[in-house]
Image (cartoon, rainbow, N blue to C red; front, side, top):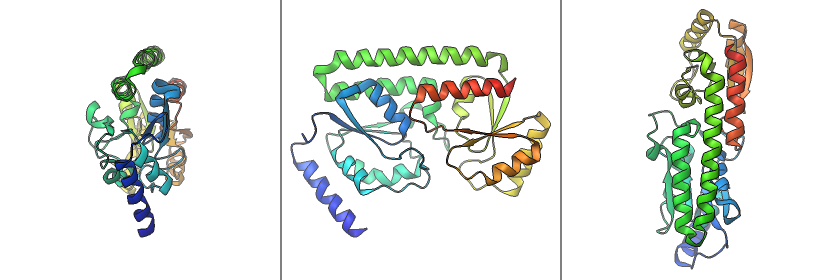
Length: 275
């Protein structure tokens, strides 16, 4: 670990004192795959994006690799969930803040995330604001490409608006209804579309026997027959709950990189579940 840290300090010094023109493209680091999606939609071939917490990894326990520390040393822009909400991001922060000309976008802070719920990237109004912040940062680093970047931003906004309208339309008949999740990833999404998320986990804490009993009671009382589980997470407790309430387990992936396809697919699944 000491050797890795020593090498990283050398790299940071080179990046800090050098001319910084290692890549022709603007180097960007995004903490999770959905944020990578937004940067690539706006930046296109002008950006090279590295994802700190890769697909299939848990943001709660992920450990940074040496290659990722190297990417941080070279990054012109860092896009984070932020708000001091993700444990994995905290491990990167003291490296991220060392370079003076780097732009850091703290998504949760700018979007007003709710305490103890980092899943702000699943909230349409926040994502629209984030895409504007990313565009501003990329224009600052590529002023000669302002027209191209702003056109990509407008195209993304159009796609976001169309997808939001579609989801509102298909979920409108089910406003006020509840769905059951093991990991509480879809709270912002639920509130935005007039639904209620019932979660087994609370604020990242271990699930107790009392929590299981509470959820089983609520699910039986409300006739819930589907339990959403997050891809890559341990499902043993979820399987127990599903067996107790006679429910099906359905896998979701709130960290999927193809953001528009993912939220649209989740909404369509909800429509089938809530009927």
